[in-house]
Amino acid sequence: MPWAAPTIGVYGLVRVGGFVKVWGRDWTPTPSPFARAFAVEAGPSGILWSGSAWMSFFTTVRLAGIAAPLTAGLGPLRLPHRGMPAGEANLVIRPEAIRLAAADAQTGLPATVRTATCMGGHVEYHFATEAGPLFAVIADPRALHGPGTAVRLAFAPYGVNLVAS
Image 1 (tube, rainbow, N blue to C red):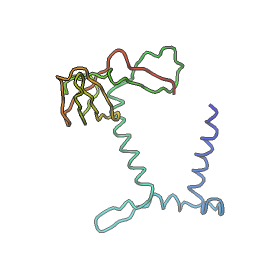
Image 2: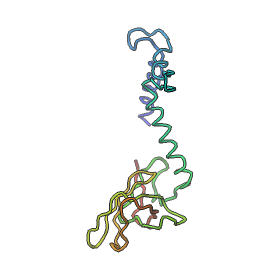
Image 3: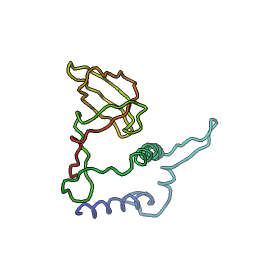
Image 4: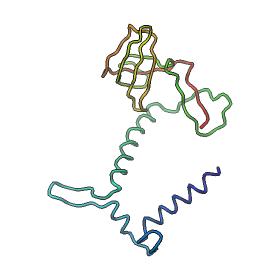
């Protein structure tokens, strides 16, 4: 893990920098940069989150709120590892390995059709999901679902692989 030491160093500098007067010039300890970043004011229309760090904070909380139920709902994902060592990996799904299921199906990843393009012998879909956008090629053009349609996505036993990060 050659990246660990520089990463820890950068995070340490950020912590120190948040509590000094002027970075690189005046190392006097003070909470003022932190207080400025997370400033809150009372205005005529209620609370004003005026600090520059609040947008990042609320975005982080919103993304965690989206990811937590998805992670809990899917549970541990078990895929063939094909001899890969333990650790981080990327999930790669071939577009033709995605299958459509009815929105009221008991299993599958909930999705909303964003676009559907009939290409003659197949339909190309763009889906919005809690896991992010997905692109799929569905072989049956008779099963056309229009934009805004709620569906569930299932995955074929092939074309879903782990690749080392």
